[in-house]
Image (tube, rainbow, N blue to C red; front, side, top):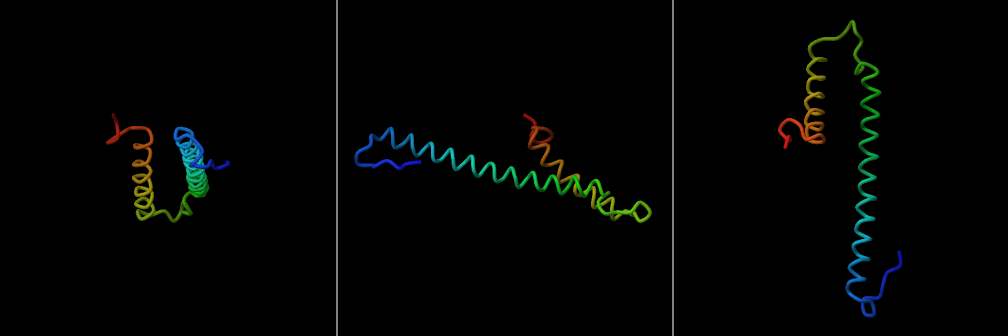
Length: 89
């Protein structure tokens, strides 16, 4: 994007250009965070497909506690994302 000369360009045009650059930067940051979340979700799905690395003959209450902890953290995220639980409107 070409930068405008602040001495020869009307203020409203300068503000519009700054707003456009700001929206572009926000979109780039958003897409970066989305990619980060997508990667984490893919890793979690893979770990879940592998039963969280727990062999059925070796599952104990420690495994249950770990999954309970993971579930509580994910519940906080889904409650926030879907306006449920404490985040309900």
